[in-house]
Length: 212
Image (tube, rainbow, N blue to C red; front, side, top):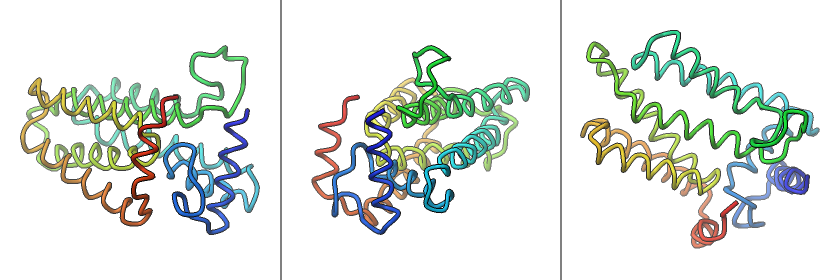
């Protein structure tokens, strides 16, 4: 698939010290290229590391979502939800295609769906009244962190997730304190990544140009 080759090329650039928005313009958000660079590093300079990184991402998102959602739903339902999010990432075929069509193409979409699904569950599944303040803050901070990260992964998913946050706030699904924690952590994560990458107007151009 052409996008797989392009991501490998951009990941190789990052692996060798080039910086998105400065030395080249990324196809999507720059974090996708850094993710590919991390996979190349895991594979000791080989794309074989993509499989290793995928396994790490599946474990991370599954465990993270379980930790956040266990205060909001039945333990078995929580387990099913977290495993489902992990399987979205692990799925070896592009979403919407036949299961026999194995491909690494559009892997970023599978990760994007998983992260948006995680955020939707956190926003619209309120914590149980018996849950402590720490679990509420943890959930809101998780959503805020993911929002900041998604802004540099693939802009369209950030727009959808941000819209879901506004809808949840309008519906009263998110309390004022949860909203403030989410926005605060989102601003911090976005600011940290923006400060490191310094994309300038190129980031706005990316938002205007990404539609796939």
